[in-house]
Amino acid sequence: MTPDAYRAFIDWILSDLAERRTSTGVHFKRGDRRVEKAAGGKRPAPIRSNSLSYQGVTTFRGSDIIRRLNLAVAAAGKLEEIDGVLGRGKMGNACLAVADAVLSNSSPRIRARFFVGSRRRRSQAVAPAMKSPRKLGSKPDRLPGDGLDLEDVNRRIADAELLEAKFRKNTPRIERLANTIRTMVERYRKEKPPWTNEFQAWFEWFRADQMPDAEWLSGQRRIWGTFADRIDSGTGGLEWLELSPLFGFALICHRRGDHEEAVRFYEAGIRALPRAEIARPFHEYLVEQITSQLTACREKKPPPELKPWSEQRARSQETSTADPGTR
Image (cartoon, rainbow, N blue to C red):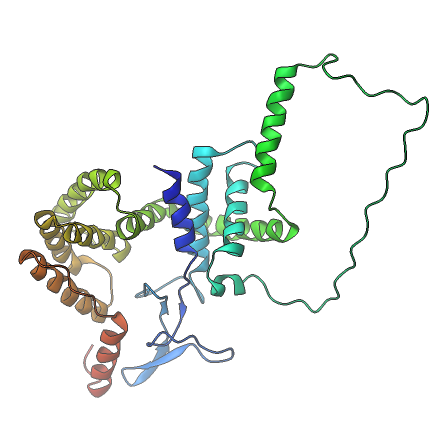
């Protein structure tokens, strides 16, 4: 796996944040109750971002920031396995890399959750103390090469230069943020043991949607072919996070003109949708959108533009308000 894919994934996962928003995507103001009207009553507003909306019961209190940080740290850990150097260890270096990404490339909504203005007076810069000149008669410095292993010295110098280049941007601000991120991620991984499977699913979805290069596609054809066969032969429930990458790969094949493979994956996903643990309105929305894509694929036409989920959600709320017995 190329390092560029992991770096792009870190920037992508930190470019957005799912929070409790209105059905039109508007953020709640400070002090507003995070609820919306539905079926003649009120319920907590779902956690949604610009590109996804969590359905059903979620374990997040106000946003999915802890999941996004864990995914970013996991990708940074993969980078450490590829080109890591001596330093604080894989986890420490990964958290430092994510802290730097949060400060430089992340969504303003993510940065706002870590940094607020300070009213304290700024301390004045203090000039460094001057070193006193060496006294006469003091012990002379060691001469270069005097009893030293030059190969060991050169190796240490090279490692030090690598570390300096890697962490030259480290400031107390980044250090504090990295420690905070590490605490949050370690708590999340303790509460969610299968987080490695979660990372793999998100990363494959990212590759399918953002970086479908030829090398990746050749491997994914085999993987998702096996996955589609396993879904057809299974009977248990599925999470939407497990199933959604299959539709993403079907859409990639569709756009590239591989209509036979795309139809195979579309049909396998549609057959598995009734087993997915998702809310009924969202299920109806998915069936409508994927069926339209499947029809276009069979006719060898480009995939139609997907309708926003917010429009379907608004229609389902109007229907349930008009007829409270409809669910």
